[in-house]
Length: 108
Image 1 (tube, helix red, strand yellow):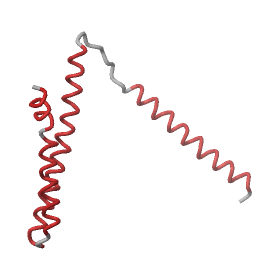
Image 2 (cartoon, helix red, strand yellow):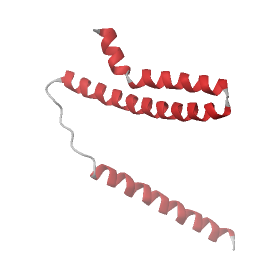
Image 3 (cartoon, helix red, strand yellow):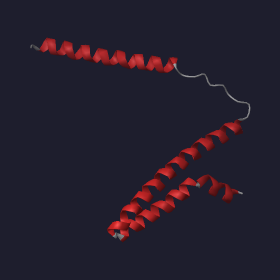
Image 4 (cartoon, one colour):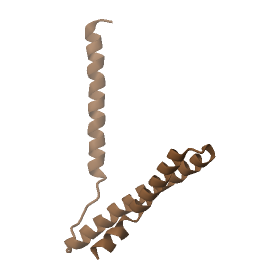
């Protein structure tokens, strides 16, 4: 195969990728929902805060689940350091899960 045919195939492949990206961007813009502003900016901030705290709650639950597995694996093997790490993960996960309540308790 000569050099011209290889360059042509490379350009043809690149053009296909370019077109695919343009189609993906176009579909993204077509499917974007219309967003309307609210009259109360505080409610927007409260909604964002609730969303962020719900994400942190999910992350805390994942950490607690990992900690329970780690503690469960540490007991049969009598590994003290793994057990301590498991309990530290458990405590950290519980703190992350209840971060919103802790912040509300501190802020009053």
